[in-house]
Image (cartoon, rainbow, N blue to C red):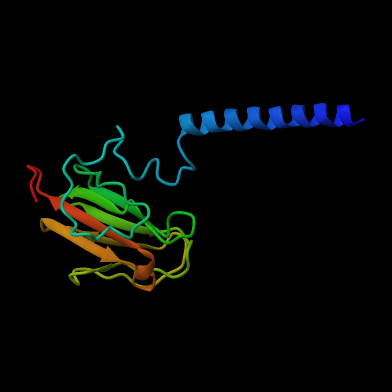
Length: 169
């Protein structure tokens, strides 16, 4: 009886390990949970080579791993209430061309959010509704840092870097 239990336990362990290995391999091939796969990279998967100096702005931002290059697009989506707890912008840092409209789209996660530029250039209403949007068209070059005021202390911050078509901030 003990022998059967041990054999059964080993088989069960090997099945679990095998299933875990297959799941991990598939997840590696398919990307992560989809949280950032199509919104934080260019179609060819690249980040900006020379990101601007954000002066420590992203030091406490958990999902910042570089500036995403979206230059050449007329409209760019940034999700509000991204990540597990809904306390992030995705992507947190994006580079766009002069004249690009950035649309912040609420996911409905993480409670009530807003989007407020540090330089008071733009400010959204507060919302917790999935699908709520706020948009702003960037007509000046530079780095525009912004926060969600209710979640600033959790590191819910972002930045839009605007370049002319020729490059250079």
